Amino acid sequence: MTKFQDWTKEEAKRTFLFDRWGNGYFDVNPEGNLCVHPHKKAGKGIDLNEVIKEMKDQNIALPAVIRFQDVLRSRVVEINETFKNVIKDANYPGDFIGVYPIKVNQMREVVEEITDAGRPYNFGLEAGSKAELMSVLAYNRNPEALTILNGYKDRDYLKLALLGRRVGRKVLVVIEKMTELERLLDLSEEYGVRPLIGLRTKLSIKCAGKWADSGGERAKFGLTTTELIKSIRILEKRNYLDCAKLLHFHLGSQITDIRNVKDAISEGSRVYAKLVKMGLPLEYLDVGGGLGVDYDGTRSTNQSSINYGNKEYASDVVWGIKQICEEESVPCPNIVTESGRAITAHHSCVITKVIGTIKTAQTDFDTAKSLDEHILVSNMRDVVSELKKDNFNEMYNDAKKIKEDSISAFKLGVIDLEEKAKIETLYWQVTEKIGAMVDKVEFPSDDLNHLQDSLTSQYLCNFSVFQSAADSWAIGQLLPIMPINRLNEKPTNWCSIADITCDSDGKIDKFVDLEEQAKNIPLHELKPDEDYHVGLFLTGAYQDVMGDMHNLFGRLNEVHVYKDGDEGEFYIEEVIPGGKIKDVLSTMQYSPEFLSYRVKRIVDQEIAKGNIRPREGVKWVDFYDSCLDEYTYLKT
Ligand SMILES: *Cc1c(COP(=O)(O)O)cnc(C)c1O
Image (cartoon, rainbow, N blue to C red; front, side, top):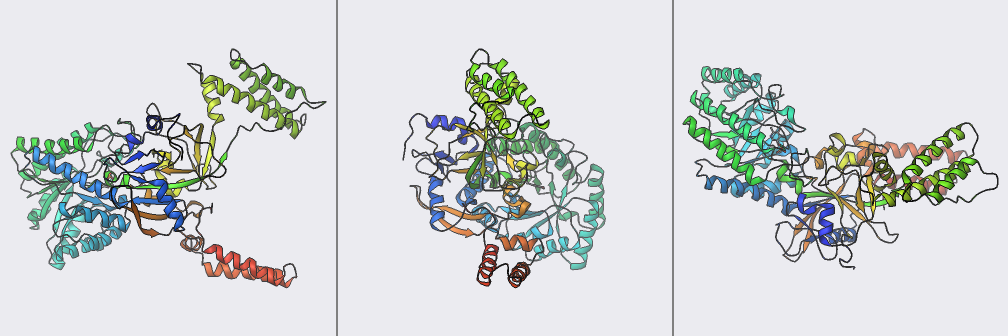
């Protein structure tokens, strides 16, 4: 194994920024492999390359999701400890009691790990739909932990909440709409169960970022000021005032600017204080989710970044609430947060193998002069030979013009395919030469930037953006991407990433960069006899569970890795097989048995016609059947 030589670890950091977005969980070892440090401690981390080797030994195919359950635990502990410490420092008279909103990643193993790690903190769960509530009721078994219910609610949803109350759980129904309140009270009377009620308020502030519409007056959820007052009247009239325990607001996900948190806390605490003064016996103030993740490592207000840390967030929440409650002379509430993204994002990644490159600039076609070649070919050849450092701008313009003319000439039948291929090859030779020169020019023009982009390759990776990085496609979310091995060698190929779906959108061409979003990342030249793996990181929040079935690529194989000692040892505790072809077909209403029957019939007909020998026919049918049991991704 080569050690770092012409390329240092510092350069690897500067190129891929894993020390910035990695939040202490990632590092590169002397062998040049990316390592995971589940407890952020120095020493040996878990070498991702070793994990992949182990998977290979166990016949688990890539692409795969790798979950580091210890990272998940570490996130839960970190967020709880941060709040606890701030509360202590601030002499805050209430508690912190968080919940994890399972919509962010509903995987059973994720929820189990979070509730287990959160037990000492009475960390609870939040549900936003009936199905989520069904699982939360079964999995949130700590009677001290909260279960918070958001989202729109029908009778069954509310009745399930009452079931939770009947079995002694602290289930808080957050009223998003006035009609839910009357419905809840009706059911409570019908079943003789006193509910715990939360009221969700719409704050006037809207925060910047992709999720701005979760806040503000036009937000989909929450009660307006007049509705809050009406709710109090209803509760009073129907004798349920004592059940109102919580005030809730949620600004939106991935709050990029800490100032928005401060503003929301002032407004929300003020509403809390006023409601208490109006006689509501509130005990909890739930400030929702939104604690962000620094996906691009810039620590800025970029949409994929945040300009604050956990500590600052917790301080602003705790001190902000304290100050206003003291001003208003009301008791300080227990503080609830519903952070999801910040808990789950770091713990999982998607590892895929690069299976090839797609290169536009092809320069290896024979362009030797033929006897009666068209003048356009000769002209382009002249550009190649005359190209120098001091005339490249002019030569580039000439080359572009000749290429354009050649397209017209081809359409008119003036040049043939062979000549067209020669012109294109020579053109790419020109651009490559210029590409190598402009590195040294201080201010390349837009034209030349464009030229450099056109020279980059696409690395084709065995995965689907739509399944594994939905937000990258849907909302331009940045996810860190980097190779997991050869990080002690300088990567020399600038490229973007293409997936294997038949969709031109199935690509990633936005990458983390300290300056501005980069369109390309440097990756290593592929070696014919060595696998090259690229990882998509911080995929644990939303991406893991939002993937779609585009092209019928289903869920990925998945392994759960646990740390086993401090010397980088690990073990794979659980393997969850990804979608087989028959599974994804079934979800689209096809019956695999019927498909198999159909294909057999078609083959039989050909056998009957004498076009296929019976022995061969059986083999084709067996082959078809065996493919139904295969993984949907490419076998590589
Ligand atoms: C989505 C959501 C959350 C989670 O937000 P994060 O940004 O992932 O922390 C919390 N509360 C509510 C009401 C939500 O809708």
